[in-house]
Image: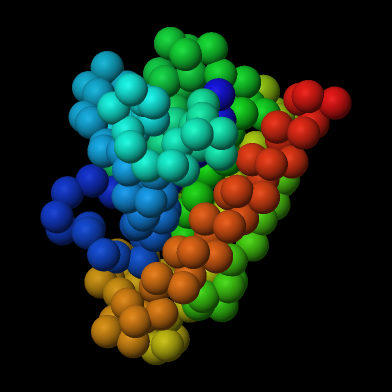
Length: 195
């Protein structure tokens, strides 16, 4: 199983905000695969799981087999609680995870993959790292949202703002870049397991 976790905050208030870019990426992945998210209260998450009996998309065969998409509904800063609940029930390992989230230290539109490291100050990622022993490697795809154009604006306020019209125009291309990074990670991890 490969668990792909998109980070964000639940509710309409946070929809289409910079901080919810992780949600936007996994939403598009679910759409491309042809699966829907279902609310799973026991995990405090929305979960999308491919099922070859009910999904007609050709993407399901092979490439997306064994992939689960998860959107914690706990609010960003305690995302780890949801991930831990899902992993406990489904016997996932740290090497089965990749986390997608916004990163203000990366220019808008840049997408970067990292196999391990610190949270870089991202509270959602830190919450996930905290459920594992110190030093555990957790793969992540960071989507750059840049810094506030106005130096007087706090970062907290900036990340919770809706994406601008210009940013929304560029979003489909950015999301595709992030999905490609996840596919590359999945390919490498699958080869590692089989070799």
